[in-house]
Length: 365
Image (cartoon, rainbow, N blue to C red; front, side):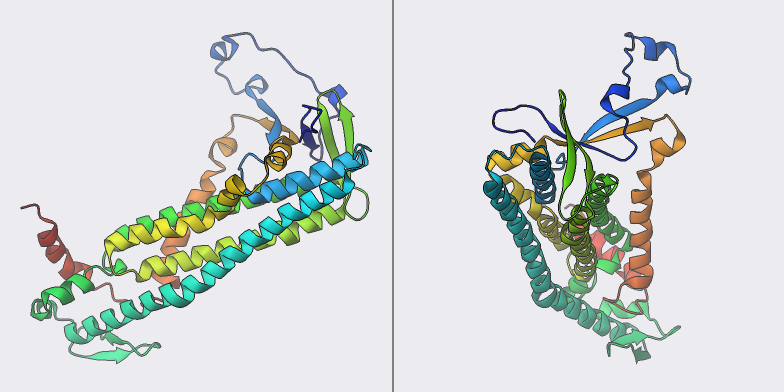
């Protein structure tokens, strides 16, 4: 971050970073990369800085302002504005708590008034379908009918009314592939938030530890103010007030969203509900853009993490982040076929009789 009279960026030096005097830079002639296709050390790329607030959300603003103010205090450059900076960081912290409170309140009411109703309707509709299509049924742990093996009669579908067919054939699990794609998109959005949370925590926890209470050690150089160490208190504050609550909210959103989408009784509503859920993830970015003072954003945006990473052209560096995609695929499969309790003991007996009916409705005349 910068002071009003200075344009120098605030940087954070992670553990293992070489001092500025020992960092070497090498000029690469134009076209040199094209002349050498080998995977030698010359092809390695070093990432010197990573902007701490590059994701533009309220959590990054809080961490950026906190580290900036602690660094200014360590360097003796508070200029009598210690109280102002304290209240600035406290105000950002309050907005961050307000964001979390709003997310938790909305999650609670969506679970209470929206998803629970949708789950009840889906269970009732499928129970009536099972009772109508099977000659013998049993009750599951929710008291809903489930057809017994060998007692299914697909011809009974024709005796249902058109309205009953439209309701039953649009339950989300009637088209598992479509549902799984929508759940996959929703899951990737939440995993992206989790990934940012882990990266944010790593940026702070990877710094060397020194000092007591809430403190940070920094160096004033020509390139800017570089934070070299932070206290245990700063790391604990980051974990307790940012990382853990953010992870809990995101994981709760993931579960609630999957539950609501699975209980939706309209294919169009599945898409609309997924869009409605997205704004809960983006709420912190909304507050960042509309509530935060411009000076706070300037300080936070210019807070950087210095790194000395060798991004070698290896298989791991090319594919490491794909693990999030694989985890998303695994979670969707696990949820749909093993974890979901919207329609327990689901027999996957709707798609076969409903596909011709849905095709007839979708046919362009």
